[in-house]
Image 1 (cartoon, helix red, strand yellow):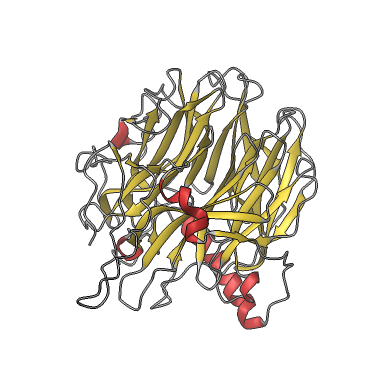
Image 2 (cartoon, rainbow, N blue to C red):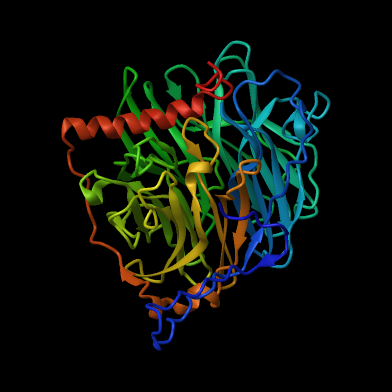
Length: 535
């Protein structure tokens, strides 16, 4: 078991020198591997008191476990960052609360706080945060320094008559040091379920920020949208901006802003036949008037993902299967990354990338960008630096062995042209098998990735080796020092694979893809429902 990192200070994790060969050999030992770039532990021990949610336990509570981090950078001040994550994850969905952190020195030091999204973070009937659990953290920062944080907050078992839920947005006028009372952009009691929200601040106009999510009600699952036009002081009533029709739903809606102010909202669309998923497609809609009107949907790509699994047992790992990560650059380029098995004929997921150079109207055929295609790669996050360099982070299992552990690595890929790539290590190898089990080993449906100047800053969760503190959230300053400086010597420059269109899978493989999509949806819908650990 690896020791737990103990401080919030920047820590350099040094590689160990390899031992020399046979006894008596005069050959010098090979040089040690390069050190990793500076890593900072952002999260700490849980601040929540036992029973703070005020209900009987339902599922396994992983106290001190932080998962699913997200991060934003101030477009006018690259040293100003805000991150958020789930604190104390439940096996039966969501967490006791969300925690956040702010940095004003480019990610080197962080100060933590919480918005009142749930009872454990101070939510009550008076401030609108009287909910048992919170999930899906997302943050944004406007060019005036206003910070935003958004969450789904829930009580009871989702999609039952006794449940309640809301999409809550908190504003911070001091950049994320403290948070104002959240505003509900939508509240529901009973069967409707609001899910997988995200938040985007408009860097071209500080007055505007946008919230987007899917809302499930029966066989309907449209995309809903709300915006602020006064830097988060008030929010417009939620409204549908894309209705996929009956027996269809969207998921994982995310908005990016182009240099001319155009908005592009990307999402996954699922088409059902009864309870079965018959197709999964990444799509986008556009708005040229700050979200007032939206275009017809544009197909980015079909998705053929089988999801990550334990290499030894085949047990499903809860990852980002079927979900995309999208980013837009100051040069107008858009990139989207996701897991896809088409490159291996359906044997394993790799990391797919598609780009648009015309504002999201057309998209390139997907290419595989993970450097080691013979192992599973999953949970990509994408960002684009101001100089046009694309960065993509992802996990893979190249270090795994036949032992019961699941040895996992975390990587950053960089490219300036979408073809020639450079890989560097973000974090030391860790054991995924000790992650919280939330209907599958779970570190999050997504991780965070931004840039500060020419430095990429991944914000991510890994396991610690301590079962009383299974996971922590870290930031790595992926600059020109450490591991990222030795790319040529380490042989980590490579070219992406050729574009690959999807093929019609055999019935057995089609069922694998369909089951993966159904599993993604089921996990999202069952917050608060008794799981295998409580039956």
